[in-house]
Image (cartoon, rainbow, N blue to C red):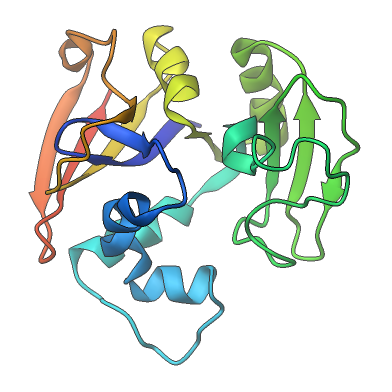
Length: 208
């Protein structure tokens, strides 16, 4: 069982632009949303449309072998819908997960369950305690730290991530939440590999 992170970042290290659902976000993830795997898992498009190269291989690996996930309140969307008790996340009625997700938040909320096995639990706790709970839920499968950038930095700084994959898009955003702040020499604890996709995105993987 490993603790994994998969993030899209810009050349200047921005993982979340200042407008997290705006045009810059679209540019940051367009290689991912264009893949056949994303279209199938998120849009439920079974036509076979979408790219099938290197980006798609990493998109498929994103979903493979995960048994539970930890994410911040912003990734779930609580920053945009803080007082809406009916908010069920960005993903509609069929989130593309199929496993339990722990959302770190200061707001108490009842768990949300979906028919495909996705379950969101909301926890007011430390990242370490959330990880322990996720490990219990995942069993022998892997745990993903889903984001956002500050939460991922916390886990990286604490030495709790076994595999970090970043898809570096060839764009410069200039402002937003940066992944690498405070993480100098992070690479020294990992074996680093990289691969260039047809889209120009560089997939960099840090493996302990």
